[in-house]
Length: 96
Image 1 (cartoon, rainbow, N blue to C red):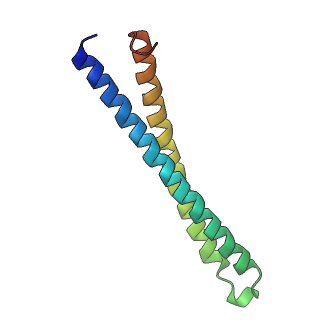
Image 2 (image 1 turned 120 degrees about the horizontal axis):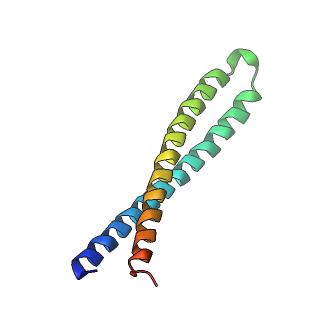
């Protein structure tokens, strides 16, 4: 494997790792959002039914969970790409 090929392979790995770090950061933000929403649900659930914004809160949660699911699917795809790149590097003798 040439130096240029090694450099390209490592650049691909770095790009993949950067994507994983960004994705995990997004997951962390999502978890923080879920904590905030849970607190809002708990507060809404303790209010009188007439003044409860529970329906709106639950609709917002459903939308955010859909977004999170899409993000997690993308993360899975990125992880598979990284796995293939690492496996290829291992087969090429780049990784001991």
